[in-house]
Amino acid sequence: GQQLNQSPQSMFIQEGEDVSMNCTSSSIFNTWLWYKQDPGEGPVLLIALYKAGELTSNGRLTAQFGITRKDSFLNISASIPSDVGIYFCAGPTRPEKLTFGTGTRLTIIP
Amino acid sequence: DAGVTQSPTHLIKTRGQQVTLRCSPKSGHDTVSWYQQALGQGPQFIFQYYEEEERQRGNFPDRFSGHQFPNYSSELNVNALLLGDSALYLCASSLSFQGEGSPLHFGNGTRLTVT
Image (cartoon, rainbow over the protein chains, first blue to last red):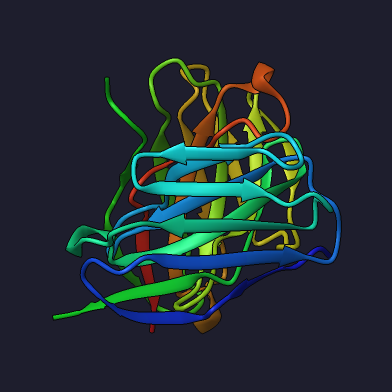
């Protein structure tokens, strides 16, 4: 089946740094979603992308829908402690059935 | 506006037992999906319920079954539990008419441990 690979697998950064992560697929997606999951909680939707080439922002977060429709990127500017968590990309393989990526774990070093 | 609520939050069962997990969707949502998230992995789709029927199913055995009630709430049942069923079980709700990619709203999950 379809697989979504995220990189990097984990990141250790200092507060205030910018963060970049990406997600690649073996197949084309028509929608890309980015979720964040905090410990002990369910994933929370951050950004939804619906069109190839689309660039969408949500506060300090910016995500892009790759032109090939096989990748997507998420950037976080000026990281703060509450950005810690696991970031998942996801795409629908059938309506409302999401395939999730492998996740990028973000840790902020004091 | 209540989000997706799941119960119980934690559960410990023994191999071979059966378990039932419960989910109430976000207000106004009519579709419920269940996902299994093993430690260190992304969520994996189990199945989806709409209009009280299973509409889609992922690659999970028949030991996993579900139900949706007229008020859109849902249950996930797992029979003959195996150690490998230990995971976080997430419920997500959405609006059916929004179609492909309609954002899912997740609950905080039920942590199931099978010993």
